[in-house]
Amino acid sequence: MLLENKVIIVTGATSGIGAATALEAARQGAKVVLAGRREDKGEALAERIRAEGGKALFVRTDVCRAEDIEALVARTLQVFERLDGAFNNAGIPGPVGTFVDVPPEEYRRLMAINLDSVLLCMQHQIRAMRKSGGGSIVNCASILGLVGAPAFSAYSTAKHGLVGMSKAAALDHAAEGIRVNAVLPGPVETEIWNHVNQGEAVFAAFTSGVPMQRYARAEEVARPVVFLLSSWSSYVTGTSLAIDGGYTSR
Ligand SMILES: NC(=O)c1ccc[n+]([C@@H]2O[C@H](COP(=O)([O-])OP(=O)(O)OC[C@H]3O[C@@H](n4cnc5c(N)ncnc54)[C@H](O)[C@@H]3O)[C@@H](O)[C@H]2O)c1
Image (cartoon, rainbow, N blue to C red; front, top):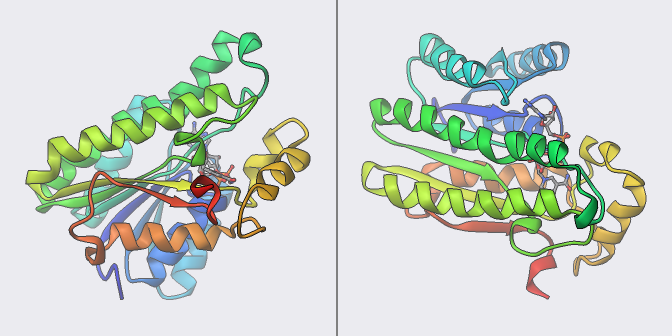
């Protein structure tokens, strides 16, 4: 198993790509810490993992709250005594709309969730990983971390920033045995599209640009993430892995 006895945090673990990754990591032997805001969904997923014979702990976490992030890592160390990996995945899509009309307060909220929170998460995670002798962090960016798309300026700004932040952290901590990589999913059918105005049409437009001519299932993102969290990618750091059916190769 790729993650036997590794302790892994997943943020935004209560749905979509986060939930799929938590499940796959547990199936690969990890002790998984599920971080999210929705207690009912988080506890249900933890229970499902335990029912399959895995180990999981849900910690209620709003990644906008610095004290929640600190408590998440502290609780992980208290229960599992180490930290080997983290998937910083929590994110929102909006505000969606023309650049000139983006409301500044919504822009700032998106940046707080999609970018600033990852800085804080990584700082606490890296401190914990140092004590564990190294680790692997994967940040969930997007194809919009590499290219733009009409009406997604705030999201695209944050995801481009996340790619840069991942490289910067990778360089600063490579010599300590802490790897940092980003994944760049293309369109994946998850709840995130429910929060986009005319989400179905926008999702279809993205999907029609995919050379493989289909969207990804959450598991198809989860498995490359598990690979990056595992020692099978032990010489991979600072990279951005597109999981996009060829979208950004056009
Ligand atoms: N679905 C796609 O097409 C797609 C494509 C590229 C990248 N992504 C990225 O994948 C990641 C996961 O999204 P998803 O598609 O699984 O959608 P999703 O909506 O199912 O997952 C996002 C998760 O983040 C959580 N979250 C949001 N704000 C939070 C906060 N303040 N604190 C804690 N958790 C919070 C949500 O509750 C949710 O569980 C996001 O970062 C998203 O930008 C998604």
